[in-house]
Image (cartoon, rainbow, N blue to C red; front, side):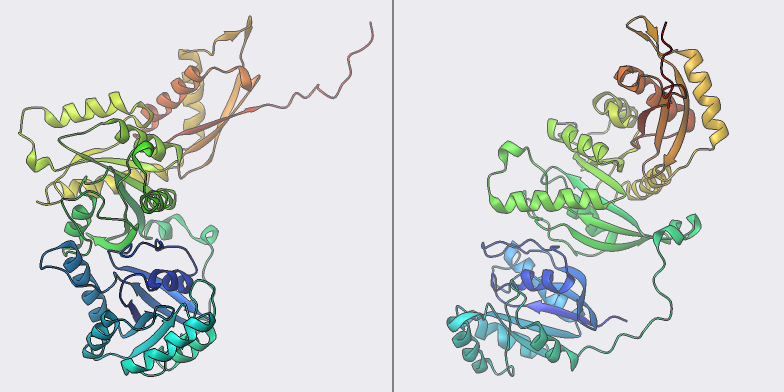
Length: 460
């Protein structure tokens, strides 16, 4: 069982910067504006020979019961309960504040080991603030600069007394290339939930978890970081990323929202399956189409989820109409699974999780070479490539070079002359013949080498 440490403290003392430093990646958003972090975020930290789980939390702050601030503090309290030890962070440049003193009492009442961190301790002002922190009665402060990586040796010494040694493993971790398809099928499926603001992404994930793990609010833009949570659904493991809502670029003005959007786009690139969530009352809007196009360009499997279905008046053939609308508005992912759900009421969740697994299987599919060759011959006979400048194009053969997504190389003459409409014809024919609904299909053109190119033309 991994040793878990929660980073706590008032807003804007550098908790997320310290989190990023310890996990070795910029996972948590960092900005000068207080209160950037809202949901708690977990990561695997490493400090020299120490390995442990770390939780970044919202800044401890007071708020009215039921308010977003109060629910952020509830998330922090949950993190403290889950942790084996706490890192209490103060801003050494500012010195002690009444809020620091109040929450030092809060940390003591948790009855868990506390490591006092005086962050931003570089320079004379930082040293004075660190000295002040002795008044909290939490022991000797560890003076660090999370931004510049100073004081990590002292932090290691303080944590060594708490974190148990990591047992050495005899075998090195297996490389992806050495893992069989059967073993890969048992790995967690990486899923990103994306969509416009307030489409209900966090509400859906909370229902999957069976707890209020992620903050939700009628106010658009509650989620800022891309938060990853582990879910087991009917024996299958998933790693699900909740992301910030994606608006049109022209409407994004604040620096913080730009960071949130960039974080969401990273989640899409890291994912294997992307669930694009739409509001049932405002579906297939321009931004929905742009998001779907982004997912297709990134080569990820896509599942369309129409949320808040409980608010829609039921009519005959609604689901089949959704299918028709999806194929009309999103021809680039034709046949992508579309599921009507209600994250709040739990409707359609089983169908959604099943659709994710089916999309993942299609995304990983490799086609038999013999069947691919038969299809290729039939497709060319049924619709031969057009003549360009009076010369007919010659298509020699096609081969699949990889899956994830299914990608093919088509050997031909005059690759630059093959029109896009003919490539679309081959792509759609591939999807229909081999049942590849929705997943991106890549066809790369390559000119077959001319065996006579090295011979010079004889003089007449």
